[in-house]
Each structure stands twice: as C-alpha cells, then as structure tokens.
Length: 246
Length: 253
Image 1 (tube, each protein chain N blue to C red):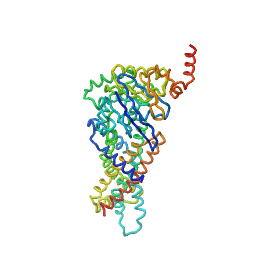
Image 2 (cartoon, rainbow over the protein chains, first blue to last red):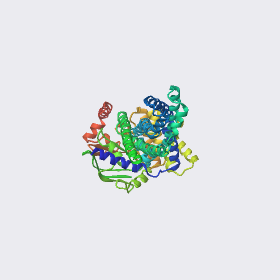
Image 3 (cartoon, each protein chain N blue to C red):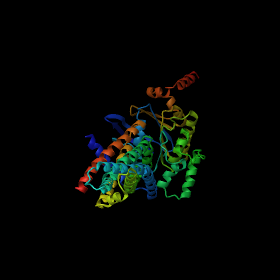
Image 4 (cartoon, one colour):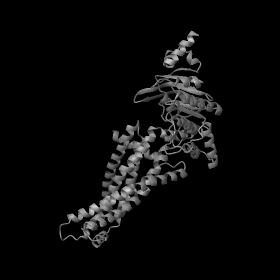
C-alpha cells in the first residue's frame, strides 16, 4: 500500500511542478543557473570517466579477441556500440543520478527543514514549480549534450589508450568505428538520456521536497533519492530497450 | 481582523487543536502563548494554510480562507508576511536579495522603486550595513530583522511571527519585540505572535491567548495576565524563579 501511496504522491508532485511559472524572467534566470550547476559542473567527472571507460572497453575487447578469424576492427566496432547503446546514456546517467540526484535532494531537503519552502508558499509562490521545474528542464536540455560529449570522449579514449597499449592501430580502430554504423543508435541513446534526466531530477526533487525532520532525515532522503532514481533508471532502461530495439 | 471559528486539527488520530475559536484584532499585537505541545505552532500553520484544518473556518476580514481554493489561498497569501522561528532566509541570496524577492515576484515596481523600498525596509529594522552579506554571515538577531524586513516589504495586512525571540539574548529580544509592535501600530496590521517568552508577553502583549491541550484556556492582555486566578496560566507565567520573586515582592508591597 505504501508503494501506491508514494507513487500517487509523486504524480501529484509532478502536477504541482509542471504548472506555468509565475515569473518567466526569474524562471529563465534559474534555468540557466541550473544548466550550469547540474550540467556544466558535471562535465569534468563525465570527461574523466568517459575517457577511461572507453580505454578499458577497447583494451578488454582487444584482449578477448583470440580468434584469428575476427578482424581487429571489431575492437572499434564493439567499443562504439557499447558506448552508444549503454555506456554513455545509461552508465553516465547513473553517475549523474549519484552526483546531481544527491545534490538536488539535499538542497531541497535543507530548504524544507529550514522552512524556506514554507516561506515561499506563504508569500504565494508555487514552491514546487519555482524550485523544481527549472532543474528538470535544465537537465532535460543539458544532459543530451553531456552524453554526446561522453560518446566522443569514450571513443577517443579507446583510440588513444588502444594505441598506447599497442592492441589496435588507428586505421583499424577508426574503420571499426565507421563499420555498419546504425544512426538510430544515437537517437535511441538521446531519447534514453532525456527520459533518464527527467527521472533523476524529478525523483530526487520529490524526496528532497518532502523531507521532514532535521539534518539526519535530509541525509536519509538524499540517499533514498539516489537509490530510487538509480533503480527506476535501470528499470526504464530495460523497458526502453525492449520497446525501441526489439 | 482574523476570525478563527471552531477549528480542529488532528494528526494520526491525535487531536492537536480542539474546537478553537478566537479573534485576532487589527492594529494590535496578538500573542498566542502556551507550553510546548499546546498547539501554538499548529494553530499558526493552520492560519497560513500550511496545514489544512479538519473542521471550522478562518476568516480574514470576512473573507473565507480555509475552505477556499488553492488559487484563492495563494492570492490572499500575498497579504501575509511571516517571520519564521529560524528566519527562513534564502541561503543562496544576499540580505538585499532576500528582501527584494517578494517585490520582484509580486509587485509591478521598477528596479529603482524596488531598490528604494528594500533600502526603506532594511533601514526600518536598523540594518543598513548588511546589504551584501549572506544569511550565513550574519547573527541570529540580524537574521530575524532581515526576516521582518522581508515580511513587511509588500505592506502586508497580516503579520505572523513564530517565536521571533527564540535563540536571542534578552536585549536583542526586546529590540525585536519593539520592532514588531511599532510596525503593527504604524501600518495598522493584524499581527499574531507565537511565543513562550514571558518578557515578550509583558512587553508587547496587547492581546494574549493562552492555549493548553489544544484548547483556548484563557484570553486577556499583559496587565490582566499577572492578576488572573487561572491556575494553568499562573503556572505558566510564574514558572521561572524570576517571576516568582517578582510576585513575592509585589505581594509584600
């Protein structure tokens, strides 16, 4: 029963959040602030992870190709498809669920327990829409750019570290990257990214917005935000994959 | 004037407010006093609709509030100013931005007019040197004064203060109390203050309501509270050693 109650509360919360902003000027200001805070500030960690994950993917694939009948360009092909289909949209979104999700939940949770959200409500501000809508829309806007950057860096990392390890040549790797390319995979990855961005921000905001108590409870709601958004993200990944690739 | 008509509020089957009826008068500082758990905070949260009442109604100058729609509540709330116990200032904004916030959101003032109004409000609470500081950089007393400045920025008709003196030293408490009373009289607004600070009661208690076990137990003013024979009110008023000594001294006289 508790699950349905929480689910109902979440959908009501989404209803509150997706209402017309009371002041567009302030909304856009907050939107660009969140683009920077949730997106641009996440770029360094995404760049580092993408580069090294691409490297690990390439080297592992190369070392596992033992058959002389499998051409070496398969390393590039496997790296590309792994990055496009799963690594960049899903794994990077999971990392963002940890970084961005905990930040959103703790920020809103602290605002709740220090009565800042109540202060907004008493002024006549729709606090849900005012605080949460810019975060959700900013993540939906900026995350696809982050994922595209991650894709490029993942493949670049594969190429650079593959060459340094001496497991593949530039020509073979680049040929593999281009071989049998399915453009729909990029669309599929970006659609997943948009859905994940919505889930991460809205679930984390939900747990933060309804936090009760003090610092301890804010910590608990922050943890819950990361755990639930990660689980639901993986569930959504399965459903989207089933729907779009089957 | 705020009329509270037979309101009740329960949480998980536990009645916190039980058929409470009161009138908060315009131009007066109306104090709600009572021990911890007496229902003061719940009453205040019902007054501003942070909690929905189970029964009864609240009227603001004759306008129904508790049973009105969310949109109507939001409109009426623009006439509210509230000073929270901890100030509830926005951490990410400076003192100036905190006070300017309601003006930027809900007034059609130009930037220059907003600037003048913010300066006026901050001067009114004697805070003219802290414009660019963040809430984390100012003291508790200053936070309360910024909260008062923010609350009066839009010229509210109703001012709510939830334990405005908690955590403040006696001298700063008197400054805050006097400020609340001056603002109430100056702008002829209806002010409701939740407190259990007896110094505040005697300083600004133009109308006092004593809550006990979620019910209105006693009503009077700062003069009559010292002379009442109501046992619960007496126990509350003379709980401290200081007030017991004052009573003994006055009895000797």
